[in-house]
Amino acid sequence: MKVQKPKLLQELPEVCDLQDLLQDARQNETEIEEMHIKGEYLVGEDITGVRFSNILFENVRLTDCIFQKCTFIDVLFKNCDLSNCDMSQSYFNRCEFVTDKALGAKFSKSIMKDVSIAESNFEYVNMTDVSIQVAELANSNFNNASLAECKLKNLMCDKVDFVNANFFHTPLKGLDFTKSTITGIVVSDTMSELKGVIIDLYQAAELARMLGVVIK
Image (tube, rainbow, N blue to C red; front, side, top):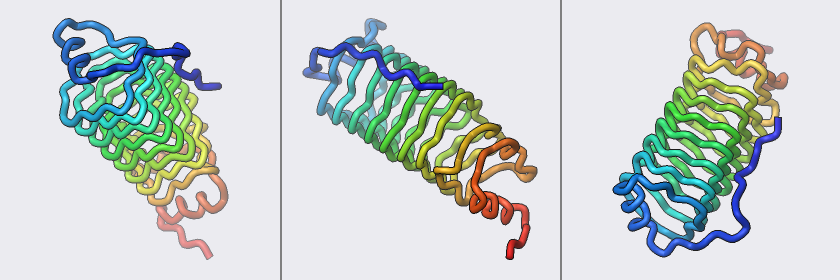
């Protein structure tokens, strides 16, 4: 199933002061929509509960910011730094992350529908208990990420590094890992998460070692 891209307007007015815009949206409970947010830098801002619609974030640094319970619809993050941001319990629909950095960011208990992540570094990201419905990950780093207890539907992976990623209690049936790296992934003792997963012979040998099997 093809992932729907953000439906952005061709011309979006550029924001001059993101901090004031966010404060106004929170105080007045208004939506931030149809804007191009470029080159802004914020640290530790509380942006809880804000709704973003038809937004292009470009070359923006939003480190250690709190985006809990936010809504993102038709949003593109391009060349952004979202490291250590808390985006838990948020809703993402038709969103795209391109050449972004989100080291240690938190997306737990969020809903992601028609989301694509490409050429990005999501190492140590926390996506525990996330519901993913139609998404694509490509050429990205998810090493040491937590993807435990997730609900995955129509997730496509192409050249993604999942080294030491945690998939505890996340059913992986139908997920194709053959173009990705899954060395050292974490699953339960029964390895029930791996039932129906698609892997190559080399990956199968790696997973067999987790069972204590000696391959000669």
